[in-house]
Length: 285
Ligand code: PMP
Image 1 (tube, rainbow, N blue to C red):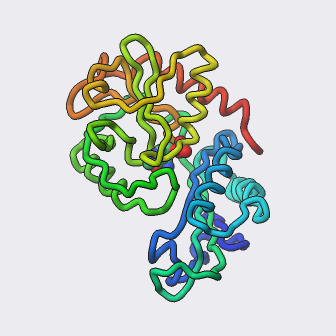
Image 2 (image 1 turned 135 degrees about the vertical axis):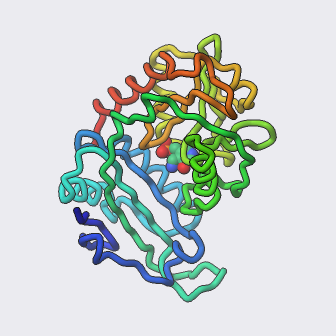
Protein backbone atom coordinates (compact mmCIF):
# COMPACT_ATOMS: atom_id res chain seq x y z
CA UNK A 1 0.00 0.00 0.00
CA UNK A 2 1.35 3.39 -0.99
CA UNK A 3 2.04 5.84 1.81
CA UNK A 4 1.47 9.55 1.89
CA UNK A 5 4.75 11.25 2.74
CA UNK A 6 5.72 14.86 3.37
CA UNK A 7 8.40 16.78 1.43
CA UNK A 8 8.99 20.51 1.78
CA UNK A 9 5.45 21.43 2.68
CA UNK A 10 3.64 19.00 0.35
CA UNK A 11 1.81 15.77 1.13
CA UNK A 12 2.38 13.31 -1.74
CA UNK A 13 2.06 9.61 -2.57
CA UNK A 14 5.50 8.11 -1.86
CA UNK A 15 6.21 7.38 -5.56
CA UNK A 16 5.76 11.07 -6.42
CA UNK A 17 8.02 12.45 -3.69
CA UNK A 18 11.57 13.46 -4.61
CA UNK A 19 14.52 15.56 -3.50
CA UNK A 20 17.27 17.17 -5.57
CA UNK A 21 20.42 15.20 -6.52
CA UNK A 22 22.30 18.28 -5.21
CA UNK A 23 20.83 17.92 -1.73
CA UNK A 24 23.65 18.15 0.81
CA UNK A 25 21.99 15.41 2.80
CA UNK A 26 22.79 13.06 -0.10
CA UNK A 27 26.24 14.44 -0.96
CA UNK A 28 27.69 15.16 2.50
CA UNK A 29 25.32 13.59 5.06
CA UNK A 30 24.78 17.27 5.93
CA UNK A 31 21.47 16.47 7.60
CA UNK A 32 19.93 15.60 10.93
CA UNK A 33 17.03 13.30 11.72
CA UNK A 34 14.65 12.05 14.38
CA UNK A 35 12.64 8.86 14.69
CA UNK A 36 9.51 9.14 16.82
CA UNK A 37 7.52 6.08 17.87
CA UNK A 38 3.76 5.95 17.38
CA UNK A 39 1.59 3.75 19.58
CA UNK A 40 -2.21 3.77 19.70
CA UNK A 41 -2.03 6.47 17.00
CA UNK A 42 -0.20 8.86 19.40
CA UNK A 43 3.38 10.17 19.45
CA UNK A 44 5.82 8.99 22.13
CA UNK A 45 8.08 11.63 23.74
CA UNK A 46 7.42 14.12 20.92
CA UNK A 47 8.62 17.22 22.80
CA UNK A 48 11.93 15.61 23.77
CA UNK A 49 12.57 14.61 20.14
CA UNK A 50 11.87 18.19 19.05
CA UNK A 51 14.28 19.57 21.67
CA UNK A 52 17.03 17.22 20.46
CA UNK A 53 16.29 18.15 16.83
CA UNK A 54 16.68 21.84 17.67
CA UNK A 55 20.02 21.10 19.36
CA UNK A 56 21.31 19.00 16.40
CA UNK A 57 20.31 21.77 13.96
CA UNK A 58 22.02 24.40 16.10
CA UNK A 59 25.23 22.34 16.38
CA UNK A 60 25.43 22.12 12.56
CA UNK A 61 24.24 25.71 12.01
CA UNK A 62 21.24 24.67 9.90
CA UNK A 63 18.70 27.50 10.04
CA UNK A 64 15.37 25.75 10.47
CA UNK A 65 12.68 26.38 13.05
CA UNK A 66 10.68 23.23 13.91
CA UNK A 67 7.95 25.33 15.57
CA UNK A 68 7.48 27.64 12.58
CA UNK A 69 7.34 24.59 10.27
CA UNK A 70 4.68 23.06 12.57
CA UNK A 71 6.42 19.69 12.65
CA UNK A 72 3.97 18.53 15.30
CA UNK A 73 1.05 19.24 12.94
CA UNK A 74 2.82 17.41 10.10
CA UNK A 75 3.41 14.37 12.33
CA UNK A 76 -0.28 14.33 13.27
CA UNK A 77 -1.39 14.74 9.67
CA UNK A 78 0.83 11.84 8.53
CA UNK A 79 -0.60 9.61 11.26
CA UNK A 80 -4.12 10.49 10.11
CA UNK A 81 -3.50 10.25 6.36
CA UNK A 82 -1.74 6.88 6.71
CA UNK A 83 -4.11 5.59 9.36
CA UNK A 84 -1.03 4.71 11.44
CA UNK A 85 -1.74 3.06 14.73
CA UNK A 86 1.71 1.63 15.59
CA UNK A 87 5.13 2.24 14.05
CA UNK A 88 7.37 5.23 13.54
CA UNK A 89 7.70 8.59 11.87
CA UNK A 90 11.07 9.39 10.30
CA UNK A 91 11.94 13.08 9.96
CA UNK A 92 14.99 14.45 8.18
CA UNK A 93 16.14 18.03 7.76
CA UNK A 94 19.12 18.68 5.49
CA UNK A 95 20.94 21.96 4.90
CA UNK A 96 19.37 21.99 1.43
CA UNK A 97 20.65 21.97 -2.16
CA UNK A 98 23.65 23.81 -3.60
CA UNK A 99 26.39 23.22 -6.18
CA UNK A 100 28.78 20.64 -4.74
CA UNK A 101 31.33 22.34 -2.52
CA UNK A 102 32.96 21.50 0.79
CA UNK A 103 32.15 25.04 1.87
CA UNK A 104 28.70 25.11 3.38
CA UNK A 105 26.43 27.45 1.37
CA UNK A 106 25.55 30.67 3.17
CA UNK A 107 22.04 30.61 1.72
CA UNK A 108 20.27 27.31 1.27
CA UNK A 109 16.71 26.32 1.97
CA UNK A 110 16.60 23.27 4.24
CA UNK A 111 15.00 20.13 2.78
CA UNK A 112 12.39 18.64 5.10
CA UNK A 113 11.06 15.13 4.60
CA UNK A 114 8.95 12.83 6.73
CA UNK A 115 7.51 9.39 6.22
CA UNK A 116 5.68 6.80 8.27
CA UNK A 117 6.58 3.15 8.71
CA UNK A 118 4.05 0.75 10.23
CA UNK A 119 5.71 -1.71 12.62
CA UNK A 120 4.83 -3.74 15.70
CA UNK A 121 6.64 -2.07 18.60
CA UNK A 122 4.83 -3.23 21.73
CA UNK A 123 4.60 -6.91 20.73
CA UNK A 124 8.14 -7.13 19.44
CA UNK A 125 9.43 -10.74 19.14
CA UNK A 126 13.03 -9.52 19.67
CA UNK A 127 12.06 -8.17 23.08
CA UNK A 128 10.52 -11.52 24.00
CA UNK A 129 13.55 -13.63 23.01
CA UNK A 130 16.35 -11.21 23.92
CA UNK A 131 19.18 -9.91 21.73
CA UNK A 132 22.64 -11.34 21.16
CA UNK A 133 25.45 -8.84 20.57
CA UNK A 134 29.11 -8.89 19.61
CA UNK A 135 31.67 -6.13 20.30
CA UNK A 136 33.62 -4.15 17.71
CA UNK A 137 35.70 -0.94 17.86
CA UNK A 138 33.75 2.32 17.68
CA UNK A 139 35.18 3.99 14.56
CA UNK A 140 32.59 6.78 14.25
CA UNK A 141 33.40 10.49 14.44
CA UNK A 142 33.42 12.12 17.87
CA UNK A 143 30.23 14.17 17.65
CA UNK A 144 27.89 11.25 18.21
CA UNK A 145 25.71 13.57 20.29
CA UNK A 146 24.52 15.19 17.03
CA UNK A 147 21.91 13.02 15.35
CA UNK A 148 23.25 13.24 11.78
CA UNK A 149 22.41 10.94 8.87
CA UNK A 150 26.09 9.92 8.75
CA UNK A 151 25.16 6.30 9.50
CA UNK A 152 27.52 4.27 7.30
CA UNK A 153 29.59 2.74 10.09
CA UNK A 154 26.61 1.81 12.31
CA UNK A 155 24.92 0.28 9.24
CA UNK A 156 28.11 -1.71 8.46
CA UNK A 157 28.25 -2.93 12.05
CA UNK A 158 24.57 -3.93 12.15
CA UNK A 159 24.97 -5.80 8.84
CA UNK A 160 28.12 -7.52 10.13
CA UNK A 161 26.24 -8.66 13.24
CA UNK A 162 23.38 -10.07 11.16
CA UNK A 163 25.87 -11.79 8.81
CA UNK A 164 27.44 -13.42 11.90
CA UNK A 165 24.04 -14.69 13.03
CA UNK A 166 23.58 -12.28 15.98
CA UNK A 167 21.45 -9.17 16.45
CA UNK A 168 23.75 -6.20 16.91
CA UNK A 169 27.17 -4.77 17.70
CA UNK A 170 28.03 -3.00 20.95
CA UNK A 171 30.82 -0.60 20.05
CA UNK A 172 33.92 -0.19 22.21
CA UNK A 173 36.22 2.75 22.82
CA UNK A 174 39.16 2.73 25.26
CA UNK A 175 37.94 -0.59 26.62
CA UNK A 176 34.38 0.52 27.44
CA UNK A 177 31.04 0.17 25.69
CA UNK A 178 29.86 3.33 23.95
CA UNK A 179 26.50 2.18 22.48
CA UNK A 180 24.76 -0.17 20.06
CA UNK A 181 24.57 0.51 16.32
CA UNK A 182 21.28 2.38 16.85
CA UNK A 183 20.58 2.18 20.58
CA UNK A 184 21.95 3.07 24.00
CA UNK A 185 23.47 0.22 26.04
CA UNK A 186 22.82 -0.50 29.73
CA UNK A 187 23.41 -3.20 32.36
CA UNK A 188 21.78 -4.22 35.63
CA UNK A 189 24.45 -5.32 38.09
CA UNK A 190 24.20 -8.35 40.39
CA UNK A 191 23.31 -5.95 43.22
CA UNK A 192 20.49 -4.43 41.18
CA UNK A 193 21.96 -1.12 40.03
CA UNK A 194 21.26 0.24 36.55
CA UNK A 195 24.61 1.25 35.00
CA UNK A 196 24.67 3.37 31.84
CA UNK A 197 27.31 5.49 30.17
CA UNK A 198 27.11 9.19 31.14
CA UNK A 199 26.14 11.75 28.50
CA UNK A 200 29.02 13.22 26.47
CA UNK A 201 29.97 13.58 22.80
CA UNK A 202 30.76 9.82 22.84
CA UNK A 203 27.10 8.79 22.52
CA UNK A 204 23.76 9.92 21.21
CA UNK A 205 21.70 11.43 24.02
CA UNK A 206 18.89 8.90 23.68
CA UNK A 207 15.38 10.15 24.32
CA UNK A 208 14.34 6.67 25.46
CA UNK A 209 17.41 6.45 27.71
CA UNK A 210 16.45 9.72 29.44
CA UNK A 211 12.82 8.65 29.94
CA UNK A 212 13.79 5.21 31.24
CA UNK A 213 16.28 6.72 33.72
CA UNK A 214 13.53 9.04 35.02
CA UNK A 215 11.05 6.17 35.41
CA UNK A 216 13.72 3.94 37.01
CA UNK A 217 14.61 6.63 39.56
CA UNK A 218 10.90 7.18 40.32
CA UNK A 219 10.64 3.41 40.93
CA UNK A 220 13.58 3.72 43.41
CA UNK A 221 16.06 1.83 41.24
CA UNK A 222 19.66 2.93 41.84
CA UNK A 223 21.14 4.51 38.68
CA UNK A 224 24.88 4.92 38.06
CA UNK A 225 25.96 6.96 35.03
CA UNK A 226 29.45 5.76 34.11
CA UNK A 227 31.24 3.80 31.41
CA UNK A 228 31.32 0.00 31.74
CA UNK A 229 33.48 -2.74 30.20
CA UNK A 230 32.54 -5.91 28.29
CA UNK A 231 33.78 -7.86 31.36
CA UNK A 232 31.17 -6.03 33.46
CA UNK A 233 28.51 -6.92 30.90
CA UNK A 234 29.50 -10.59 31.14
CA UNK A 235 29.30 -10.40 34.95
CA UNK A 236 25.98 -8.48 34.96
CA UNK A 237 22.63 -9.86 36.06
CA UNK A 238 20.85 -8.42 33.00
CA UNK A 239 21.56 -6.07 30.11
CA UNK A 240 19.40 -4.06 27.73
CA UNK A 241 19.17 -1.51 24.96
CA UNK A 242 16.93 1.52 24.63
CA UNK A 243 15.77 3.26 21.47
CA UNK A 244 12.64 4.98 20.19
CA UNK A 245 11.52 1.83 18.36
CA UNK A 246 13.05 -0.95 20.52
CA UNK A 247 11.80 0.78 23.70
CA UNK A 248 13.56 -1.32 26.39
CA UNK A 249 14.78 -4.64 24.97
CA UNK A 250 16.82 -7.29 26.79
CA UNK A 251 20.33 -8.31 25.71
CA UNK A 252 21.07 -11.91 26.71
CA UNK A 253 24.51 -12.63 25.24
CA UNK A 254 27.72 -10.74 24.47
CA UNK A 255 30.58 -12.20 22.39
CA UNK A 256 29.14 -15.69 22.89
CA UNK A 257 28.90 -15.40 26.70
CA UNK A 258 25.40 -15.58 28.25
CA UNK A 259 24.50 -12.61 30.47
CA UNK A 260 22.98 -13.70 33.82
CA UNK A 261 20.62 -16.59 33.12
CA UNK A 262 21.08 -16.11 29.35
CA UNK A 263 17.32 -15.39 29.08
CA UNK A 264 15.36 -12.13 29.34
CA UNK A 265 15.23 -11.26 33.06
CA UNK A 266 12.66 -9.70 35.41
CA UNK A 267 14.31 -6.29 35.96
CA UNK A 268 14.41 -5.46 32.24
CA UNK A 269 10.89 -6.86 31.73
CA UNK A 270 9.70 -4.48 34.51
CA UNK A 271 11.46 -1.50 32.93
CA UNK A 272 9.95 -2.33 29.54
CA UNK A 273 6.41 -2.54 30.99
CA UNK A 274 6.98 0.66 32.96
CA UNK A 275 8.25 2.48 29.86
CA UNK A 276 5.29 1.34 27.73
CA UNK A 277 2.74 2.21 30.43
CA UNK A 278 4.25 5.67 31.10
CA UNK A 279 4.55 6.38 27.36
CA UNK A 280 0.91 5.40 26.79
CA UNK A 281 -0.15 7.72 29.61
CA UNK A 282 1.71 10.68 28.01
CA UNK A 283 1.02 10.24 24.26
CA UNK A 284 0.84 13.41 22.19
CA UNK A 285 -2.09 13.39 19.76
N1 PMP B 1 22.33 5.64 19.99
C1 PMP B 1 22.37 5.64 18.64
C2 PMP B 1 23.68 5.59 17.95
C3 PMP B 1 21.16 5.68 17.91
O1 PMP B 1 21.20 5.69 16.57
C4 PMP B 1 19.92 5.69 18.61
C5 PMP B 1 18.61 5.69 17.89
N2 PMP B 1 18.57 6.46 16.75
C6 PMP B 1 19.95 5.69 20.01
C7 PMP B 1 21.17 5.68 20.67
C8 PMP B 1 18.68 5.73 20.81
O2 PMP B 1 18.14 7.01 20.83
P1 PMP B 1 16.56 7.25 21.02
O3 PMP B 1 16.19 6.59 22.30
O4 PMP B 1 16.42 8.71 21.05
O5 PMP B 1 15.92 6.59 19.84
